[in-house]
Image (cartoon, rainbow, N blue to C red; front, side, top):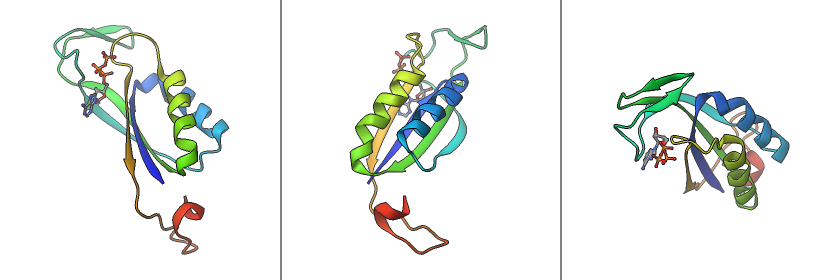
Length: 112
Ligand SMILES: Nc1ncnc2c1ncn2[C@@H]1O[C@H](COP(=O)(O)OP(=O)(O)OP(=O)(O)O)[C@@H](O)[C@H]1O
């Protein structure tokens, strides 16, 4: 199992969620975050306004999924989140040791 953390532009959240649902992803966690990438100090467009601030609002999506879904999930997120402009975001992938579904006590891939 792997955990994908994707930092995306907030207005792309619905599109990304829909593309992941089509893949059969069972759940995900979303957090409003702030951050910067390589373009720090440069302006970036956010909701029509230009920002020169250090930290821009982003959305972090976290999802844990079976190994065989990871490549397709990365492709879906990339296609849905890309505008081609700076600040489109980044995807990080981590190994996951264990998952426990609290209600049923299931563990491993069947708990994801
Ligand atoms: N190395 C990193 N570690 C942790 N978070 C990061 C890292 N790089 C980017 N992020 C997060 O991802 C968000 C989007 O990054 P961003 O797309 O601006 O990266 P970039 O490398 O500057 O790419 P681009 O050239 O497309 O703008 C940042 O606001 C930050 O929250």
